[in-house]
Image 1: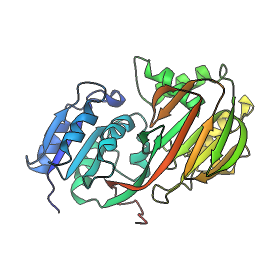
Image 2: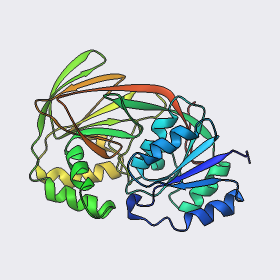
Image 3: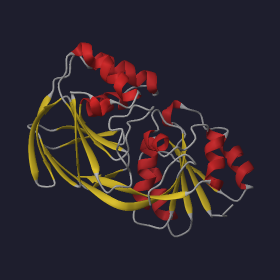
Image 4: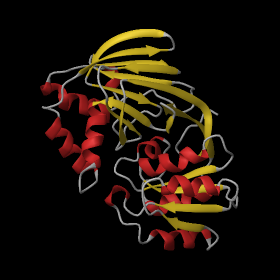
Length: 295
């Protein structure tokens, strides 16, 4: 076991899951050598991680994809390793990297897992690591962010309530200089293959290939919604006639009106133009034993 100076940053409210027992588990498996800090609000994790770069070998995010995003954003381009104890609603990046979903197993993995170097990305200069999106999923992220409860079931309920109201939009998309005109239900910019909860939109995506998968989900009849959902969970979404995937490094999307964009599930309102770029081999992260690294 390689001994690393480690800081745990715990988001106490992510995923609606209690973290009361986490400090005891950390002490048990790190023999009291790790530092533990709880976040107190938005962007707090980001600030803590930025200050930790010169003082710790590894910074561990205890939370969901949003917490991972905040901490990883400060670690991009540094030698500091990101560790993850997944405690969110979807845990998309963690699942892709085969990090254990059980809290204690994930903490154990921090002492035995391998470090991989993965790509990150930026949308209008703001980092994301798993998935960004426009259209319906960004709209749902915006609705979800205002809810009183979190979790997968709440997300599904929000989706079912909104799907009949939402209208597809027209997009002008440029991918590495080539232009596409598309009307889409949603656009997903995939670094990993999945949104979270093992729902894979781009089954062949890789976090180490230096490319983003631009997933264009075309308008579809409502009665095909369940079929598309099943395809995501059995990793065949890329074989659907309603899904088009184009890989690229530099992406520009233009739409007619301002609207939501989500970065790793966290929404914000952006303008009519969004520029997205891949940052190859930019983040050191500790992965699970089942992850097949190519670097």
